[in-house]
Image (tube, rainbow over all chains, first blue to last red; front, side, top):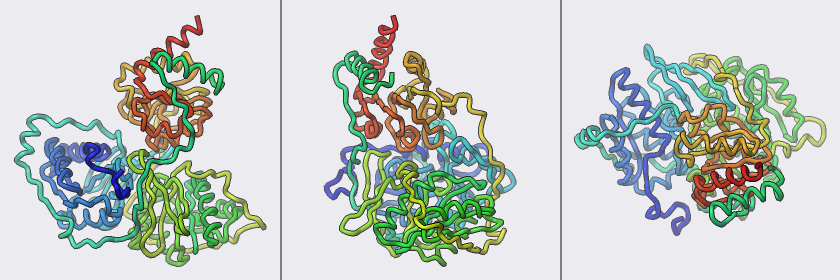
Amino acid sequence: MADASAWIRESDIGFETNEPDGFALEEALRLKEKHGGEVVAISMGPERAKQVIKEALAKGAERGIHVADNEFYKLDPLTSARSLAAAIEKENFDLILTGLQSEDQGFGQTGVLLAELLGRPHATIIMAIEVADGRMKLKRELEAGWFQWVELPLPAVITIQSGINKPRYATLKGIMAAKKKQIATIDRGTLGVADAGTQRVERIYVPQKTKKTEFISGTAKEAAAKLIEKLRHEARVL
Amino acid sequence: MKILLIAEQRDAKWNKISFETLAAAQQIAGVEKAALSCAVVGQGVAGLADELAGYQLDEVLRVEHDLLEQYTPDAYSIALRQVIESAKPDLVLLPHTYQVRDFAPKLAASMGKGMIGDCVGYRYENGKLIFVRQMFQGRTAADVVFTGEPPWVATFQAGAFRADLAAKHASGKAAVKPVSVELKPEQIRTKPLELFREAKQAVDLTQAPILVSVGRGIKAPENIPMAEKLAKLMGGEISASRPICDEGWLPMDRQIGSSGQTVVPKLYLALGISGAIQHVVGMKGSRTIAAINKDANAPIFEVADYGIVGDLFEVVPAMIEELEKARS
C-alpha cells in the first residue's frame, strides 16, 4: 500500500498487460486476418503503458494510441471511459474490443461505458464472433452454463470473455517490425474531459479474513500427514 | 432517503442473487430509515411482483412492456432510466449478475452518474455510507464512497449477503404499482437470439462429497493425473478453476465458480488456486476448505480452514503416499 493508502506502492511490483485484454487483442487480430482492416491498440496510464502497446504492435497491431496520465488510478470509471472516448471519437472505429475487466481495479465497466458514450450498441462477455454483411453474431456467456446468441449491427463495442482463444506470442520478426510502427501520445489533460466526480476510493487495505485459517507447517511430508490427520479427526471429513 | 432495488428475472424465474441484494437493501434502508421500493422488469411478471410484495418493502414496481420480454441492454437502460426519473431514488441497488454488468454502467452513464460495482459489503463511518469492493483480484479491499449528486448506482456481488435474511412483510403485503414505460422497437439495436446450454453436464459436481480442485498452480496438463489420483484416494471428484478448463486440461463441466458450478461439498481441497472472487463465489459455502498454495498471501486462504504454504508438487505426492499407507 502507498502511504496515502488509496493506491499501491508501484515500486514494489512489476507490470504486465492485463490478461483479459490479451484475449481481446487476439480476437481483434484474428478478425483482421479474416476480414481485413487495421488493428489499433489503445491504453491509458503513465509512460509504462506504452510497453503494453508495444507488445500489441509486436503481435500484429498496426499502430498505437497512448493516453498519458500519471495519476490515472485516481479516475473514476466514468471519467476513464470519457477520456478514452474523447481520444478515439474521431477515429470512427467499426469495432471496439475490450477485455472483461482489469485485474487491478476490476471495475469492469469500460467497454459498456464506451458504447454508451460513443452511441454504439454493445454486447459483453463474448465467447464467439461471426461477422457478415455489416452485422455480428455473438455468443454471450450467461451464468450457470447458459449461453445466448445475439446479433448486433456495426459499428459496435464488445467485451471479450477470458478463454475465448489462445493468445499468440510475439515473434522476433514481429518485435522488429513493431519498432517502425507509430504510437501517438495524447496527454489526457488536453482532451478537455472534466472529472465526472461520481465516486472516490478512500483507502485500500488487506481484507479482513472471514475465517481463521489454521496454517500447517513443517516439511512437505510432515504437513501432508498433519493435514490428513486434521481432516480425519478434527474436521471429520475424510 | 429513497432506495430502489432492481430484482432480476428471466422467463419468469428469479435470479436468486436478487434476494441477497434485497437483504442488503433492507439492512441499509433500516439504518437510513429510508423508503425501499423494488422493481421487477419484464413482461408477464405479475406473479413475481406478487411474490416480492410478501417481503418487507414499501412498494413493488411492476415494470412491463412487450419489448422487455427478452433482455436487451438498450431496452433495459431506457426503461429503467424512466423508472428512476419518476421514482427519484437516491440509491439504486442491483445484484452483480452477468446481466447487470451488461446494462447497469450504461444506465448510470445515461444519467451522467457513476456506478460502484461488484461490492462485497457496506458499512457506516461517521454516518457516511461506505461501499467495500475488492481490487487486485481480491488481494486488497477498497472503501469507496459516492461523491456526486444522487441517484447513486451500486451492485453487490453474489454471496455478499444471505438471501435467507431477506425479511418478510410484517403486516400483509406491500402495494404493487404497475409502471408503464415508453419504448420503441427502433431504439433496440441488439437482436437477442436463442438461449442454450452447451453439452449436457456429464458429472454433477454438486453431489460430490469431496472435491479436489486444481488451479493455475498445477502448471501443466501432465500434472492433472496426480490430482486425480489424490481425489480418487479421498473418495472425491476432480474439479478446477476457470483457466484450467479454458486451457482444455479438464472439460468445462469440471469448472467451479461464477461461470461454472456452485458447490458445497463437505471437503474442498484447493491445489494451486489463488482464489479469485469468480472462483470463490462457487465454493466458499463448503463445510471444510483446505488450500495448498505457494503464495502465503493468496486470497484462497481468506476462506480456508486449513492451509499449507508450500509446493503442491511436494505436498500432494506426500498426501498420496500417506493415504496409500493407510490403505495397505
